[in-house]
Length: 308
Image 1 (tube, rainbow, N blue to C red):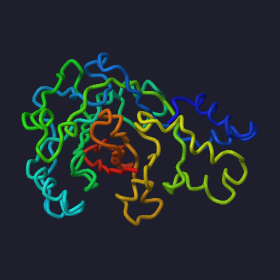
Image 2 (cartoon, helix red, strand yellow; image 1 turned 135 degrees about the vertical axis):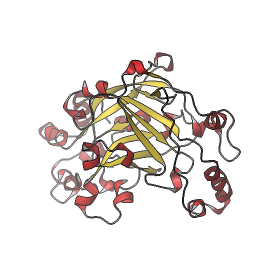
Image 3 (cartoon, rainbow, N blue to C red; image 1 turned 90 degrees about the horizontal axis):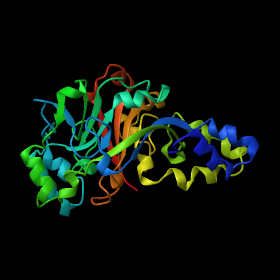
Image 4 (spheres, rainbow, N blue to C red; image 1 turned 90 degrees about the vertical axis):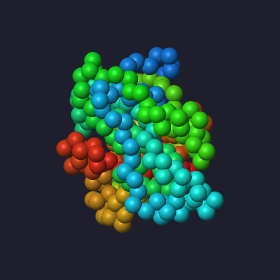
Protein backbone atom coordinates (compact mmCIF):
# COMPACT_ATOMS: atom_id res chain seq x y z
CA UNK A 1 0.00 0.00 0.00
CA UNK A 2 1.10 3.55 -0.71
CA UNK A 3 0.46 6.12 2.00
CA UNK A 4 -0.91 8.66 -0.48
CA UNK A 5 -1.58 9.29 -4.16
CA UNK A 6 1.49 11.55 -4.10
CA UNK A 7 3.68 8.63 -2.99
CA UNK A 8 2.06 6.36 -5.60
CA UNK A 9 2.59 8.92 -8.37
CA UNK A 10 6.29 9.18 -7.54
CA UNK A 11 6.61 5.38 -7.83
CA UNK A 12 4.65 5.25 -11.09
CA UNK A 13 6.82 7.96 -12.62
CA UNK A 14 9.90 5.75 -12.12
CA UNK A 15 8.47 3.17 -14.53
CA UNK A 16 5.81 4.73 -16.76
CA UNK A 17 5.92 7.43 -19.43
CA UNK A 18 4.45 10.76 -18.28
CA UNK A 19 1.45 10.56 -20.61
CA UNK A 20 0.31 7.31 -18.96
CA UNK A 21 0.84 8.16 -15.28
CA UNK A 22 -2.75 9.28 -14.74
CA UNK A 23 -4.06 6.10 -16.41
CA UNK A 24 -2.21 3.99 -13.86
CA UNK A 25 -3.29 6.18 -10.96
CA UNK A 26 -6.90 5.64 -12.02
CA UNK A 27 -6.75 1.87 -11.36
CA UNK A 28 -5.31 2.11 -7.85
CA UNK A 29 -7.72 1.13 -5.08
CA UNK A 30 -8.47 3.39 -2.08
CA UNK A 31 -8.13 1.74 1.34
CA UNK A 32 -7.21 2.59 4.92
CA UNK A 33 -3.69 1.70 6.00
CA UNK A 34 -2.25 1.13 9.47
CA UNK A 35 1.24 2.45 10.24
CA UNK A 36 2.66 1.09 13.53
CA UNK A 37 4.36 3.45 15.94
CA UNK A 38 6.47 3.24 19.09
CA UNK A 39 5.03 0.80 21.67
CA UNK A 40 5.58 3.39 24.40
CA UNK A 41 3.09 5.70 22.67
CA UNK A 42 0.11 3.32 22.85
CA UNK A 43 -2.98 5.24 23.98
CA UNK A 44 -5.90 3.63 25.77
CA UNK A 45 -9.00 3.43 23.51
CA UNK A 46 -6.83 4.31 20.51
CA UNK A 47 -6.12 2.22 17.41
CA UNK A 48 -3.53 -0.46 18.01
CA UNK A 49 -2.12 -3.81 17.03
CA UNK A 50 -1.71 -6.41 19.77
CA UNK A 51 -1.84 -5.80 23.49
CA UNK A 52 -5.33 -6.11 24.95
CA UNK A 53 -8.62 -4.55 23.85
CA UNK A 54 -10.51 -1.87 25.74
CA UNK A 55 -13.80 -3.46 26.83
CA UNK A 56 -16.77 -2.32 28.89
CA UNK A 57 -16.78 -3.84 32.37
CA UNK A 58 -18.40 -7.27 32.25
CA UNK A 59 -17.87 -7.99 28.55
CA UNK A 60 -16.28 -11.40 28.09
CA UNK A 61 -13.22 -12.00 25.94
CA UNK A 62 -14.49 -14.10 23.01
CA UNK A 63 -13.70 -17.79 22.56
CA UNK A 64 -14.23 -19.92 19.45
CA UNK A 65 -17.15 -22.29 19.22
CA UNK A 66 -15.89 -25.87 19.76
CA UNK A 67 -15.54 -27.63 16.40
CA UNK A 68 -18.03 -30.35 15.53
CA UNK A 69 -15.27 -32.60 14.16
CA UNK A 70 -11.84 -31.72 15.57
CA UNK A 71 -10.21 -34.75 13.94
CA UNK A 72 -11.25 -33.50 10.52
CA UNK A 73 -9.52 -30.17 11.15
CA UNK A 74 -6.45 -31.78 12.70
CA UNK A 75 -6.12 -34.10 9.72
CA UNK A 76 -5.84 -31.28 7.18
CA UNK A 77 -2.18 -30.62 7.88
CA UNK A 78 0.87 -32.84 8.09
CA UNK A 79 0.32 -36.06 9.99
CA UNK A 80 3.05 -34.99 12.40
CA UNK A 81 0.94 -31.95 13.36
CA UNK A 82 -2.28 -33.84 14.09
CA UNK A 83 -1.56 -34.50 17.76
CA UNK A 84 -0.69 -30.89 18.58
CA UNK A 85 -3.75 -29.63 16.72
CA UNK A 86 -6.04 -31.98 18.63
CA UNK A 87 -4.43 -30.80 21.86
CA UNK A 88 -5.04 -27.17 20.93
CA UNK A 89 -8.66 -27.74 19.91
CA UNK A 90 -9.37 -29.61 23.15
CA UNK A 91 -8.29 -26.58 25.21
CA UNK A 92 -10.83 -24.19 23.64
CA UNK A 93 -8.61 -21.22 24.48
CA UNK A 94 -9.87 -17.67 23.94
CA UNK A 95 -8.90 -15.99 20.69
CA UNK A 96 -5.68 -14.03 20.45
CA UNK A 97 -6.37 -10.30 20.29
CA UNK A 98 -5.32 -8.87 16.94
CA UNK A 99 -6.25 -5.20 16.64
CA UNK A 100 -8.42 -2.35 17.85
CA UNK A 101 -9.63 0.31 15.41
CA UNK A 102 -10.92 3.67 16.63
CA UNK A 103 -13.74 4.34 14.17
CA UNK A 104 -13.78 8.08 14.78
CA UNK A 105 -10.13 8.14 13.73
CA UNK A 106 -11.01 6.16 10.61
CA UNK A 107 -13.85 8.51 9.67
CA UNK A 108 -11.57 11.52 10.06
CA UNK A 109 -9.96 10.28 6.82
CA UNK A 110 -13.12 11.05 4.86
CA UNK A 111 -14.87 9.09 2.11
CA UNK A 112 -12.50 6.10 2.27
CA UNK A 113 -14.10 5.12 5.61
CA UNK A 114 -17.71 5.68 4.53
CA UNK A 115 -18.69 2.00 4.77
CA UNK A 116 -17.56 1.68 8.41
CA UNK A 117 -19.56 2.74 11.47
CA UNK A 118 -18.54 6.20 12.63
CA UNK A 119 -18.57 5.55 16.39
CA UNK A 120 -16.99 3.06 18.75
CA UNK A 121 -14.24 0.59 18.07
CA UNK A 122 -13.81 -2.53 15.97
CA UNK A 123 -12.02 -5.30 17.86
CA UNK A 124 -10.46 -8.16 15.90
CA UNK A 125 -9.66 -11.61 17.35
CA UNK A 126 -8.21 -14.72 15.68
CA UNK A 127 -7.05 -18.27 16.38
CA UNK A 128 -3.56 -18.28 14.87
CA UNK A 129 -3.02 -21.93 15.80
CA UNK A 130 -5.81 -23.45 13.74
CA UNK A 131 -6.25 -20.68 11.16
CA UNK A 132 -3.84 -22.19 8.61
CA UNK A 133 -5.99 -25.35 8.60
CA UNK A 134 -9.44 -23.80 8.78
CA UNK A 135 -11.12 -20.88 7.03
CA UNK A 136 -14.49 -19.44 8.00
CA UNK A 137 -16.38 -17.93 10.89
CA UNK A 138 -15.23 -20.26 13.69
CA UNK A 139 -11.61 -19.10 13.70
CA UNK A 140 -12.26 -15.37 14.12
CA UNK A 141 -14.37 -12.85 15.99
CA UNK A 142 -15.02 -9.19 15.28
CA UNK A 143 -16.73 -7.07 17.93
CA UNK A 144 -18.19 -3.63 17.30
CA UNK A 145 -18.17 -1.98 20.72
CA UNK A 146 -20.10 1.28 20.92
CA UNK A 147 -19.51 1.90 24.62
CA UNK A 148 -18.31 5.42 25.43
CA UNK A 149 -14.55 5.32 25.83
CA UNK A 150 -14.76 6.44 29.45
CA UNK A 151 -16.86 3.37 30.24
CA UNK A 152 -14.21 0.92 29.04
CA UNK A 153 -11.17 -0.54 30.75
CA UNK A 154 -8.08 -2.30 29.48
CA UNK A 155 -9.23 -5.91 29.42
CA UNK A 156 -7.53 -8.59 31.48
CA UNK A 157 -6.66 -11.70 29.53
CA UNK A 158 -8.54 -14.79 30.72
CA UNK A 159 -6.33 -16.96 32.92
CA UNK A 160 -5.96 -19.79 30.40
CA UNK A 161 -5.02 -17.41 27.58
CA UNK A 162 -2.62 -15.50 29.84
CA UNK A 163 -0.91 -18.74 30.79
CA UNK A 164 -0.56 -19.76 27.13
CA UNK A 165 0.77 -16.29 26.25
CA UNK A 166 3.37 -16.55 29.01
CA UNK A 167 4.47 -20.16 28.70
CA UNK A 168 3.02 -21.67 25.53
CA UNK A 169 0.97 -24.84 25.64
CA UNK A 170 3.48 -27.54 24.78
CA UNK A 171 1.95 -27.74 21.32
CA UNK A 172 2.35 -24.06 20.43
CA UNK A 173 4.82 -21.39 21.54
CA UNK A 174 3.70 -18.38 23.57
CA UNK A 175 4.10 -15.89 20.71
CA UNK A 176 1.08 -17.24 18.84
CA UNK A 177 -1.28 -16.19 21.64
CA UNK A 178 -0.26 -12.56 22.18
CA UNK A 179 1.64 -9.69 20.58
CA UNK A 180 2.91 -6.59 22.40
CA UNK A 181 0.75 -3.49 21.99
CA UNK A 182 1.77 -1.00 19.32
CA UNK A 183 -0.19 2.11 18.40
CA UNK A 184 -1.12 2.54 14.76
CA UNK A 185 -1.82 5.66 12.77
CA UNK A 186 -4.59 5.24 10.23
CA UNK A 187 -4.09 6.81 6.81
CA UNK A 188 -5.96 6.98 3.53
CA UNK A 189 -3.81 5.12 1.02
CA UNK A 190 -4.07 3.19 -2.23
CA UNK A 191 -3.21 -0.37 -3.22
CA UNK A 192 -2.09 -1.91 -6.51
CA UNK A 193 -4.28 -4.44 -8.35
CA UNK A 194 -2.73 -7.92 -8.25
CA UNK A 195 -2.96 -9.95 -11.45
CA UNK A 196 -2.75 -13.39 -9.81
CA UNK A 197 -5.74 -12.63 -7.60
CA UNK A 198 -8.17 -12.65 -10.54
CA UNK A 199 -10.29 -10.28 -8.47
CA UNK A 200 -13.47 -9.46 -10.41
CA UNK A 201 -13.08 -5.74 -9.63
CA UNK A 202 -9.68 -5.49 -11.32
CA UNK A 203 -9.58 -8.24 -13.96
CA UNK A 204 -10.11 -5.67 -16.70
CA UNK A 205 -6.75 -4.08 -15.89
CA UNK A 206 -4.89 -7.22 -17.03
CA UNK A 207 -7.07 -8.30 -19.96
CA UNK A 208 -5.98 -7.85 -23.61
CA UNK A 209 -6.18 -4.17 -24.32
CA UNK A 210 -5.55 -3.39 -20.67
CA UNK A 211 -2.80 -1.22 -19.26
CA UNK A 212 0.05 -3.63 -20.01
CA UNK A 213 -0.75 -3.44 -23.74
CA UNK A 214 -0.63 0.33 -23.94
CA UNK A 215 1.69 1.44 -21.15
CA UNK A 216 5.36 0.49 -21.19
CA UNK A 217 6.77 -0.14 -17.73
CA UNK A 218 3.47 -0.75 -15.94
CA UNK A 219 4.35 -4.38 -15.17
CA UNK A 220 7.50 -3.17 -13.42
CA UNK A 221 5.31 -0.86 -11.37
CA UNK A 222 3.06 -3.79 -10.34
CA UNK A 223 6.16 -5.19 -8.61
CA UNK A 224 7.11 -1.89 -6.99
CA UNK A 225 8.93 -2.84 -3.78
CA UNK A 226 8.00 0.32 -1.90
CA UNK A 227 4.37 -0.73 -1.47
CA UNK A 228 4.89 -4.31 -0.25
CA UNK A 229 6.82 -3.97 3.03
CA UNK A 230 5.25 -5.75 6.03
CA UNK A 231 3.21 -3.03 7.70
CA UNK A 232 1.93 -1.90 4.30
CA UNK A 233 -0.04 -5.16 4.14
CA UNK A 234 -2.24 -4.05 7.06
CA UNK A 235 -5.40 -2.73 5.45
CA UNK A 236 -9.02 -1.79 6.20
CA UNK A 237 -11.50 -1.99 3.32
CA UNK A 238 -10.44 -1.81 -0.33
CA UNK A 239 -9.75 -5.01 -2.26
CA UNK A 240 -7.75 -7.89 -0.73
CA UNK A 241 -4.06 -7.92 -1.62
CA UNK A 242 -3.56 -11.69 -1.84
CA UNK A 243 -0.47 -13.76 -1.22
CA UNK A 244 -2.06 -16.49 -3.34
CA UNK A 245 -5.40 -16.15 -5.16
CA UNK A 246 -8.30 -13.94 -4.11
CA UNK A 247 -9.08 -15.02 -0.51
CA UNK A 248 -12.78 -14.49 -1.18
CA UNK A 249 -12.67 -17.55 -3.45
CA UNK A 250 -12.09 -19.70 -0.35
CA UNK A 251 -15.41 -18.47 1.06
CA UNK A 252 -17.50 -18.09 -2.09
CA UNK A 253 -16.23 -21.38 -3.56
CA UNK A 254 -17.03 -21.68 -7.26
CA UNK A 255 -19.34 -18.68 -7.13
CA UNK A 256 -19.87 -16.20 -9.93
CA UNK A 257 -17.94 -12.94 -10.08
CA UNK A 258 -20.99 -11.27 -8.54
CA UNK A 259 -20.99 -13.73 -5.64
CA UNK A 260 -17.26 -13.25 -5.04
CA UNK A 261 -17.60 -9.46 -5.22
CA UNK A 262 -20.40 -9.64 -2.65
CA UNK A 263 -17.69 -10.43 -0.07
CA UNK A 264 -15.79 -7.37 1.11
CA UNK A 265 -12.42 -7.08 2.75
CA UNK A 266 -12.94 -5.70 6.24
CA UNK A 267 -9.37 -6.07 7.49
CA UNK A 268 -6.12 -7.60 6.26
CA UNK A 269 -3.35 -8.39 8.77
CA UNK A 270 0.31 -9.12 8.10
CA UNK A 271 1.19 -11.70 10.78
CA UNK A 272 4.97 -11.23 10.59
CA UNK A 273 4.61 -7.53 11.31
CA UNK A 274 1.94 -8.11 13.98
CA UNK A 275 4.16 -10.28 16.18
CA UNK A 276 7.58 -8.95 15.17
CA UNK A 277 8.46 -12.08 13.22
CA UNK A 278 8.37 -14.34 16.27
CA UNK A 279 5.71 -16.76 15.05
CA UNK A 280 5.63 -16.92 11.28
CA UNK A 281 4.51 -15.22 8.13
CA UNK A 282 1.32 -14.98 6.15
CA UNK A 283 -1.71 -12.71 6.05
CA UNK A 284 -5.17 -13.08 7.59
CA UNK A 285 -8.16 -11.69 5.69
CA UNK A 286 -11.30 -10.79 7.65
CA UNK A 287 -14.13 -10.88 5.08
CA UNK A 288 -17.75 -9.76 5.30
CA UNK A 289 -20.71 -9.67 2.93
CA UNK A 290 -21.71 -6.24 1.66
CA UNK A 291 -25.17 -6.48 3.23
CA UNK A 292 -23.75 -7.63 6.57
CA UNK A 293 -21.32 -4.71 6.63
CA UNK A 294 -24.17 -2.28 5.93
CA UNK A 295 -26.30 -3.91 8.66
CA UNK A 296 -23.32 -4.00 11.08
CA UNK A 297 -23.51 -7.79 11.43
CA UNK A 298 -19.83 -8.13 12.33
CA UNK A 299 -20.58 -11.46 13.99
CA UNK A 300 -20.85 -12.88 10.45
CA UNK A 301 -17.25 -12.14 9.50
CA UNK A 302 -15.25 -15.04 8.09
CA UNK A 303 -11.46 -15.30 8.04
CA UNK A 304 -9.02 -16.75 5.52
CA UNK A 305 -5.30 -17.39 6.05
CA UNK A 306 -2.69 -17.30 3.27
CA UNK A 307 1.08 -17.50 3.07
CA UNK A 308 3.61 -17.39 0.28
